[in-house]
Image (cartoon, rainbow, N blue to C red; front, side, top):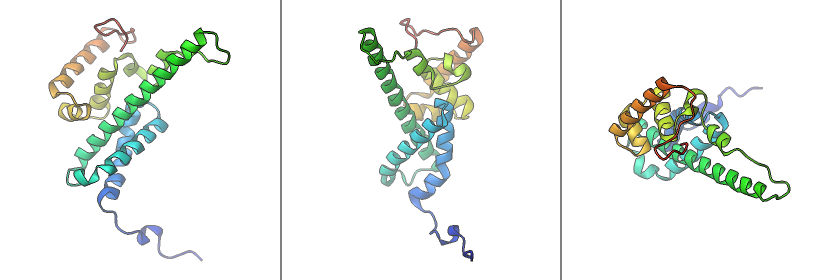
Length: 184
């Protein structure tokens, strides 16, 4: 015989961090998916960021949900950067080993690894511009919120968005280089 009281009715009401998690997790995953282009990685980054925000909850509990979501996305973006740096370091190490003739080493294309983080047109942009374009256009975040997430000024966000528009209007898909001539 089925239990007449559903599980949700037995569960105590959500408070504090649990309530924030319920409200914010899917939003953080969605924003991170747009940044990394991989739902599994987006979920992992969002979960790791939630663990960090939970550790900071005593200091952040009185802030708005939007403020805490922005902070959680900022943490997740930093975790994604760390992830990509780690992949690039590993790829270069494997490439060096492969160049020395070690058996069993697989040659990896560092450019391919760096491009896994986005899709479509965003993949042609330098990292900072790609992050700003994703948060602005796809996540519909204002310049001030993007600035808070990335730790830069709102005017820098607007400048980068102007550069994004100029780059995309000037030739989609061309390899892009930064001022030093290296691909960003």
